[in-house]
Amino acid sequence: MKQIPVSGAIILRTNSTSHQKEIFATQRGYGEYKDWWEIPGGKIEQGETPEECIVREIREELATEVKAEKVLGVVEYDYPAFHLTMHCILCTIISGDLQLLEHENAKWLSKETLRSVAWLPADQLILDKIEEIL
Image (cartoon, rainbow, N blue to C red; front, side):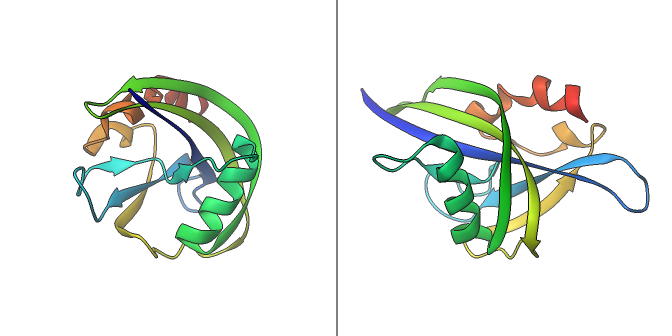
């Protein structure tokens, strides 16, 4: 089975109005899993660390500079056509406005709203750890 290593950005902020912690989720606008929600990120390139990957991917997909703070967890998941290894990295925004260059929608989710969207199957496996930090 094909192996695909990826990094996912768990972009964390504190809402200025409610003072709740929130993470940024994006909705896929293409492919087999169009309209499903995901942690933004992408494939790790040859010679790249998961942290380097997520900084590059968020710059490319969302026109935003992030700092990779720490790995929150690593998810292993078998999709029908490939095995996914996703390094879920806690990130903070350094600069930029999170512009949707590849996704069709996005939203900030709090602990209360985290499970209100249709997450991709692999992404569902990190939700318990995300809830712990929210």
